[in-house]
Image 1: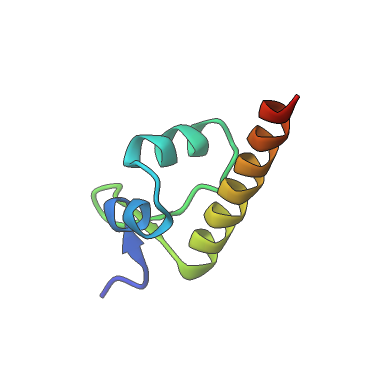
Image 2 (image 1 turned 90 degrees about the horizontal axis):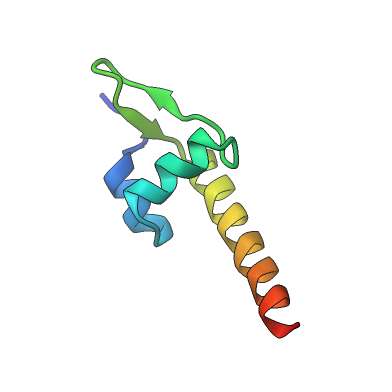
Length: 68
């Protein structure tokens, strides 16, 4: 039984691409999720909240730099 969602489902839920989630994880911008057998990423509800928070913060920052 999986307690969370896989990366493709997580990407859909937060409105990002799978590759963006992988890049942000590799860059340390979001925490590494738990892994299932086969090394599949599984995102918990708290992981999704942190991703959404980071996404909103980066969009806000981008908006500030665009206004300059």
